[in-house]
Length: 435
Image 1 (cartoon, rainbow, N blue to C red):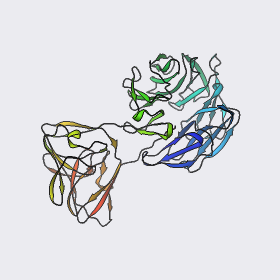
Image 2: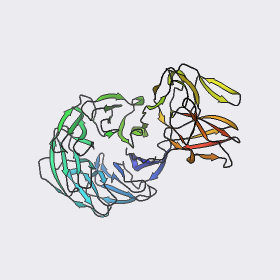
Image 3: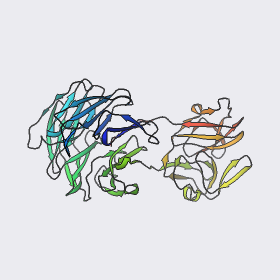
Image 4: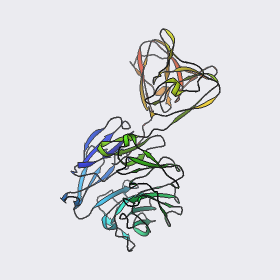
């Protein structure tokens, strides 16, 4: 899972393992990164204020582009405009927006940018905060000024021309649920966080304050109905389960201030904030167990690994297999299989962080091993040393059966000719973040 974050003084970090570790890249900018947009693992664009004349007074924008995953960024300067948002629908067609309601369009991947045609209204000159594509033709942008107005720009020809609508306060980010349903967030310090909902493809909007302190600067969808929004400088975020109709406020870990949020898929979400904070979404994993005996394992990482907490409905101790025979365990480990007995068939739910890879020690003879957070084909398992020879993998469902795939939550028997290890690695996913 690959992603990027940007911060102050042109700092950019890249991860290739879902945020476990980060490598700093050279952006070429010396001021805060305003936005990063990565089209894929290789192609991306980035915006940053150019330089400061006086405190909080900026005179231009750095525009950076990469075609090699951020190993190098090629910088161009726009000395007379402040640009805050950038988006591409493919490798050629893209849009940028910024102060004075300026929206620029490119058809050649960012080499040449042209001013687009925008309907003239009393608010069309206000700042553009976010641009997103729904398709090559359907594009929207939002922005405004806090406590004054929140214009919304709508285009159906790929951003060549725009119509402008109005909401009551500044909007900072939005997401397309589908072609008709759109949810936007924003607000200001005086009236707090706000939302705006559209059910007709952005033609009309229902604006409402949430009654919560802070400004909603970003929004990310985990599912079509569930979304998350950080509230800046509050140590909180808000969450909806009904496509933005109602919201609940939560504290971040350690009440850290968060600014941005992104979901790569339903299970993998990230929030980033001040001081280089990066938080990963904790999604409950579920799997089925049968009545009586099962071989189970832990597909997630978490702090509390007590058997009584993980499997409170189990009617037996947890038994694992060692060279000395079966042994009970009160505290369970990842990568290990355990016998557990349940009074009835049921769904097990485990909170924790995904384990997308694991290296499991194997001993000569029979082993009970565990799985990771995503299915892994037995044929894709890496053996160390290479001369390690394994039997078939066996799972248990009222009896033993050969398995060709290791499934999250299940445990397996496998026999080895010698000591060694096996490496489980799930399919990688793309992630893009900006701070």
